[in-house]
Every structure is written in structure tokens, then in C-alpha cells.
Length: 284
Image (cartoon, rainbow, N blue to C red; front, top):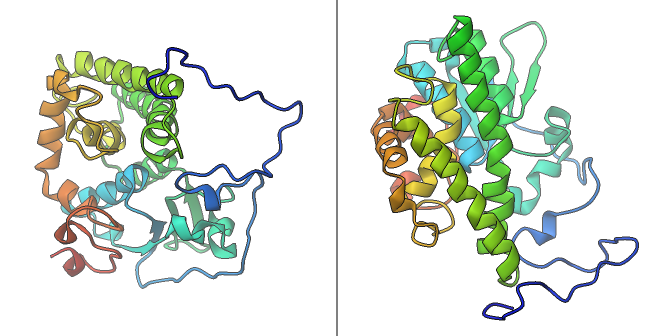
């Protein structure tokens, strides 16, 4: 109904919803209203204590950036294997992945350094786990630690509006609908304005210290202002958010960030894609 004077759809919801009619659009073949595994598929295990099963989406990049930053800071125990999970093919519904993450979302991590393998899922939880395990990128004093968690939780709660909201209706839905696109274009702009006001007063998200809050927020909102998400930079007028762009460019220049964003990446320039990472040399 693009261009119509009536921004509302003529769809009338049934009394009881059923997924019988295919929804169409990207990823429709893997969307379903139930959880659990659909097929038997064991996950590979590499030589390092940390085994990551992921894809180079913004959520996946958070963890690979964190791991590369830990290695750059001298934490050799952060060596990892990064295995590619092709979500468009439903690999996240294999029995091995569901055992690690019952929610069937990337990224998922297994730490095999202890007596028993320990699963960690949800990107924010993985960042906190790694920060506490290695004592890095998470302040210990209560005020700074609390502020880090404030912004980490902000990202975890806000990004679904960018991805599942704006990204879906603008880039992936089978047809362009005016009302949802307008609704979800407004919210990412509001969120970018929140960040822009914050970063007008701070170098990094919590101040002068680089933390997991930066690593969580950068792949989503840095990606937006750098024109990497949904080809929507012009549509969202991201040039307005100059402080976010200043911060995004500074993080992009970090060698660990440049390495981390390549891991499990399946889009962009060929030289920016490293499907799997098992040794540091894979990123050379």
C-alpha cells in the first residue's frame, strides 16, 4: 500500500491465529511457532577451550570482537574456534545447537576449559561471561560497572526494534507497508539520538573506558551510521548523528574490531569475510 492515503492494511486478524499460510519474505522458511530441534546434527569441536557457534551478524560480531580484543590484550586463554552456523539453512535447529541454546539463536558458546563443558548463550550474557572470566572490559568499581550494565541492557532491549522491527519491514518483508516502516524508522532514529547525546559528552559509552557496552552497541548502531545495515543510511538520515559516527569510526580503526567483524561473515567484500576461525593466522 505504498503511496496510499490510508497507511493501514486491510488485513483483518482471525479470531485464532494459525501459521498455516506462509508469511513470505526472507527467512520465512525457518520461522516457526515452536521450539526444539528439527533434525539430528552434531556440532564440531576444535582444539581451543572456547568453541563459538555463530554467524557474522551484529549479534555474532559482538562476541568475536570481544574475543579478539581479549587476545590483543594478552589473554591467551581466549583462543577460540569459531564455527559457521548458517541460519538461513536452519542449522540452529540441529540437535547439537539446540542443546547449547534452547532458543536456537546465534551466537552460542561452549567453554571447555573446566571439568565439564559450560554453555553460554545470548550475546550479552556471553560478553559478561568472558569479561568476568578474564577480568577485562568490565569495570570493577560499582558506579562504572553499573553504567556498563545500564548500556548493555539498553542495547539488548533496543536492538530488536532495529532488526526485527525496522530491518524486517524495510528490507525483508515480502511487501513494503507504510505503517510498520514509518513506525520502526522512527524508533531507530530516536535510539541514535539517545546515543548521539550521550557521546557528545563521552569518548566511549561509559566515559573514557572502552567496555563490553561499546562492543555490544557498535555492531548495531555503528553499522547503521556507517551504512552497513539494510542499505538504510540515507533513508534514516544517519548523517545527523555525528557523535555516533565519530565513535563508530574510532572503534572501526581498532585492529581487534577489524578482525572480529570478519569472523563468520558471509556478506560484504570477499576480503572482509572469514567463514570460520580456528587460528589467528586465519585472519591474516
